Image 1 (tube, rainbow, N blue to C red):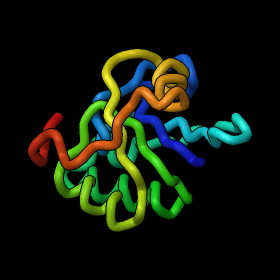
Image 2 (cartoon, helix red, strand yellow):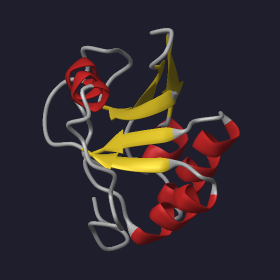
Image 3 (cartoon, one colour):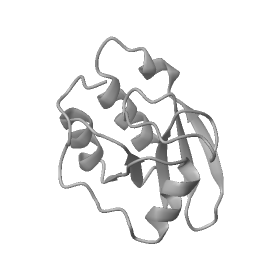
Length: 120
């Protein structure tokens, strides 16, 4: 499963970024093969508006099947769900740590957005 994790940097040891649309990077990992790659999200990091929607659309185009983040707003949540992408919320830790929690089934799928729009 192609899983994207919001990250504060470009690697597995980067900290989980709690922001979805305005994170600096996504670390995308194929949980079946362990293969990983990084998506730079700089363009949306500083967007004046629409960061969550644009980020969700970009991940959909990349073939992502699940997202792990700290928080997800209502517009991004709707776009992700419409694309068939599952959203999981995690607390603190590195990308590698939250991926391990995900693989062990310790993260629950988010039932809805957990913050208002324009949350930073």
